[in-house]
Length: 365
Ligand SMILES: [Zn+2]
Image (cartoon, rainbow, N blue to C red; front, side, top):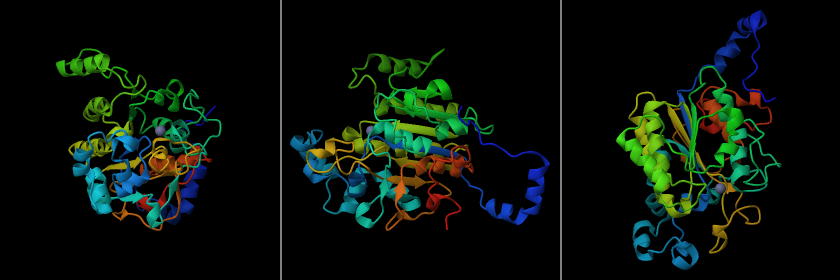
């Protein structure tokens, strides 16, 4: 029904073609990616405004922000008069490591625009767009059910060299639908599903108990801090080569999100299978409105929800930092970018998918 793997031409004709067109073939493979592993990290609904200008002073009070209930303390921690200092206070990993060694797109005040193109600007349509590589007007609800579209993760898992090395860790249990787990058979650790099975160590038993007995803010969404434990364990034990990480509740924890991403990066840099051969793509599924009320909302009724940001850090991505005056990017480009970083052409399998973000690849002009 759906193309599981790229179709391959076979036999002597291909061999002949390779012989005849050797110069072109060599040119294409002159810069094979150094990336062996790709991690796509998504922070649900984290606005580009916070990413590029830090904490918003008009939201740093209980009336408008709700979350800023310890106003004085928060101001001390996150408020700086200078926007560059302010964003670094809120997102130190992003604005030190990623800004120094990778690229960050989406600062609209500096002529870099990244957008969702699905026309809905909320969660499931956005995750479908970035994972399948194209928007789908049928997906108009978070309760849509199993995704009819192939995702780049499912496709990569069908390739012989990556089979069994693709995994998904996410707080939101709707990822079972988004990745169509029944069809894709991808291993998912999502929601409040117990992370450890079989014979458990005391530490694993303790974590399972926390999953079982902690009071839940949301039945369909586990805490980022709880997800982080089995996620970090899996790096040592399963060593996935293609990893999706979905964090949530950023309104309460934008700063902690940055901490978790930094922790993930530093853990990977400490493991030989990942060190200097892993690329992070960090992004969001949609934006939100602006102003004291609308920032809490998202979807097409809130102008601005279509705006996102995309950061990339890894051995194939030039250190250009915060990008200015770039061509407009779309969320749909993320799928083919994940594949291209691994030397794969996703659009062979899904021609409707958008092109990869050329500027973050080793072959960048
Ligand atoms: Zn969302």
